[in-house]
Length: 452
Ligand code: PLP
Image 1: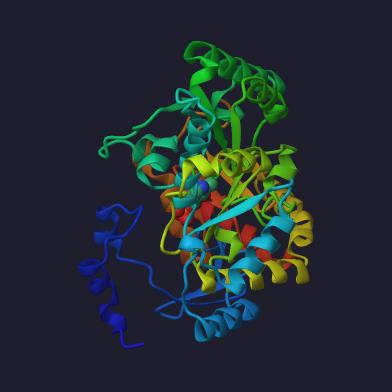
Image 2: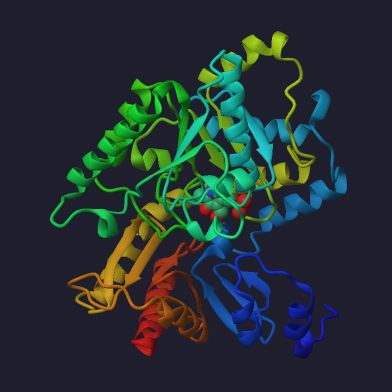
């Protein structure tokens, strides 16, 4: 490395436009420069070590330095560093990868379409849905329903789909035929005394009313993360999908499960759809498909859509969509190695065991804590919402930036977390063990204590 350690922060600020960063914070605090990682830990440029409670950005599921994936990337880069899949071209490794992915799909799927990110994959899904309805001669059936608090990406349409006003304001978004419904956030959105089941029924009624108002013949699809991630770590309340999926089916509205975070084991089942017991028409996967070692995404397309695409192909002509990196051979090699490592290391089984352990350990550590409003999530996805008043759920004033202060205190203690407002979240590598979880909880508790 040629970078001058002392000047790294200055050079960063003079050269890098950081995603999802407030320039004012960066000016005041400088960047945290990470230089290496092994297992569940990373080190910064000054040699400080951190337990990475976020697996990078919910993606390094196998932990850092997984040798099998590293070797596969190196070998494939040497053998064939790039070729594409336009015009019927293909590569051996991409063929194998598509086949392996389909074998692992939670429900029978017909094809996989590759991309390079969760955002481009969800953009692809929207286009596929529109294409499908155009081929079926239903040009009006184009609106897409998403939930407030959803996160589906940073493209123009996927930011619009995302239900976070901070991603709309100042960007002239949302655009497109996109409708938002209430997030299934029982803690924040349920009426006083409403049970989870009653809340789910109320959300189903809201959906039904929206469809009646707009006309089912205008609504094409419903997007959902099995557990909402970046929008506040929100697990579905009891009966949520059970209530809403039949409504979608009745009105011939496609269900897209955004499994960018939940795919490949994070909830303790291979797919999030298996945890929530839902059969999607389309699945979006990314992140964990290569454990974050190579940018790659995959859209899974069910027979329902594929049969139409195939039948209408003579009339439709060339499928005019794709990216240079749709089917990157190095990404495919990384994915094949990651998929094998997930199986070999029994990663999903590990999450099924340590996920509940993490939730219990957090509950033990924060039982009766007056500033912990709610601990929620499933598997290795957990959110801890801090509040000023536990009884009334009154939040801290936004200007106190309590979440950010806890995040900083945690970093000082060698723990990386993420602050979604005042909800601190953890989504550690899926290979984490119980003693590392004990360390995570103990460091997090110390960070909360430092701020209270
Ligand atoms: N969908 C979900 C559920 C995500 O959490 C993310 C990113 O965090 C995306 C889509 C977008 O993925 P990417 O950042 O790779 O574009």
